[in-house]
Image (cartoon, rainbow, N blue to C red; front, top):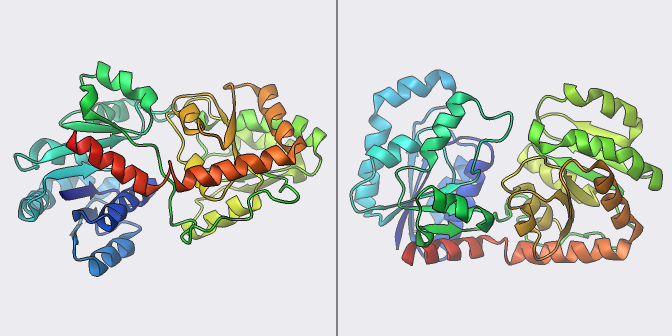
Length: 370
């Protein structure tokens, strides 16, 4: 099968997710054309993939890098004609977008050669609170258009996609896999064997729907039960709404309020005993497979596709905005080191099986061919 992958974003999870899916497709022997921005953070990995695999070709697009150059580069149209020509010359049977970007609606609407099957992955069914301005909602509506099949990361959203007009055979469910970049040797870390690590990790961009205030409110009760507990907050975003709660916890908080570079991520997960995801709204979480790849269990809220991500184990669920329930869940795990270790083992196993890129590509191909 000849597949063209396209993602023109330059940073964040998009380039990482796209590369993992593409690299595994190449490993499985599919003939790949990768269409990416030459400005993407991981362009070196894409070039290495094309250099070392005869079944991988690379088209580097001089894409947008900011809001300032988005309009002039779009109006130039040259990149779009390059994309169409490359897909035609590659004789691609499928054009697959593992993640959305600002040029994707135009590409899928006007620049895909006739007869090429178009597939998109939708990571969020709706914009998150705090990310739902009028322009974003308008753009998000285009994500669901001009595609022949659609990928969702959780089966819980299948009915919503059917309500949008997609036939069940055209909906592909592929759970979010774990990024190999963070644990490239796929060696099981020390997990939680022996004495537990008394660090609770809150990881990722600090946005309103992530529920950091719920976790900060829960921590005093957890610390009272286990005085050695410490909360590590690692991620960029506006921390000012939480400043008073953070100050009240004093030395029990370690704050890294900045963008966390890829090479730093392992150190945060290796130091923690569990990961807290107190979301107040969610589709699913990319933090869960990352935590699992380090054999770290999670305490997460019962929202969206998160229960599905934990259906085989690896964590415990609490209700959204339940401060007491969150505190009790954290305390219960530290009261029972054997249970913490059991969840760690489950997390590691899931990361290597259900949340592997091998499984993801298998599901993609089966979805294409059915």
